Length: 269
Image (tube, rainbow, N blue to C red; front, side, top):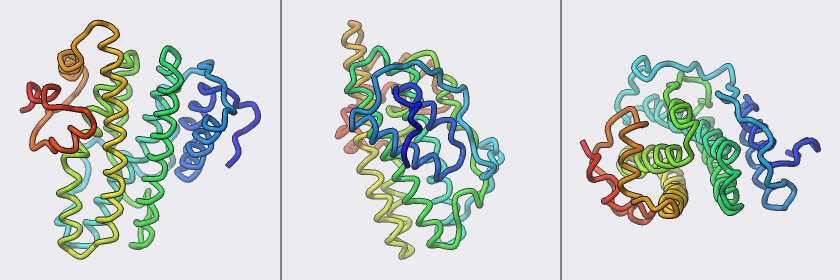
């Protein structure tokens, strides 16, 4: 996919991703924007406002989290499809979260911040493509099942504060994925679905780097302000995160990402 010639700034390019509703179109736009940045075709200008909500396709139907149907036991193919569909939706929203972070907050940061999150946005698009392809191999597709509409709440809640966004999205939500993915991989392997298990392992390796990027920029910014990163993280999570921060934690994966226990032990419920 080639970006329209009129899109020559980081801000306009990020808005373009968020305003593309079609799933394939969005992942292609994400890849094209990341490539354009890497090749020096976008100026470091933030001249376009980010939308309050990204454009969404007609399907999947978006439901409140408490209205989502139960997936059932992972032993059935139907339950595995439901699990993979839920993960595909998370990755689809993660594309928008990455580019909204750049377009909304990137201006005051060094260009390396944009480079990190462009790469992450392209990786989220790749994760979505992997999951959608696996769904199609199993006779389904993204949009065939409902998905919950709670994920964008984190972006809405933190729309005015870059540090809050870093604390909640990579350092809480993506860190939680590091906690639960190993058990999910084991469940897929236990029923002989090694293809899905390998794919989830590959995605988790990338997600460690995503949490690491969030932690790196959060720590650099808070330390530059004379704040304790761990203490300020706890303040922001208590203020902005709607839900518990609960064990068990994958301390090893979190530590690889720089998210040590002094950040989250005091928040554990």
